[in-house]
Image: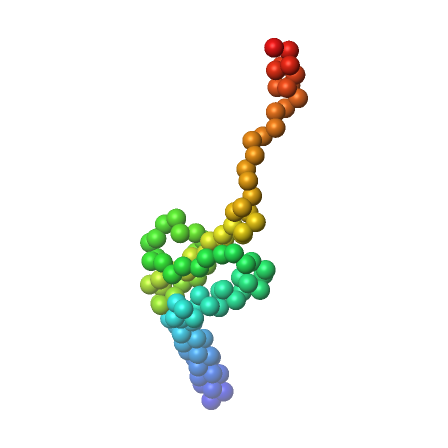
Length: 105
């Protein structure tokens, strides 16, 4: 009798955990994207992009989630901030040897 009660409890727990995983795997893409955005922003990242892409998409950034039962993926790309985008690029300063060689000519 005790054995059957224990087996029934274990079976019920196993079924409940499987059902919970199946439900999580079928999460809506917009809901998952909102959850991921909240986590990213809580880490202090302000400039980023999250895209819902096909599972076989390449060069879309880092895959950070799966939604709609695995039929779609969430891709993350960090974007340059406004200060990074506006900074001018400068040529490298000549090394002391290059300057000395130019002076001797």
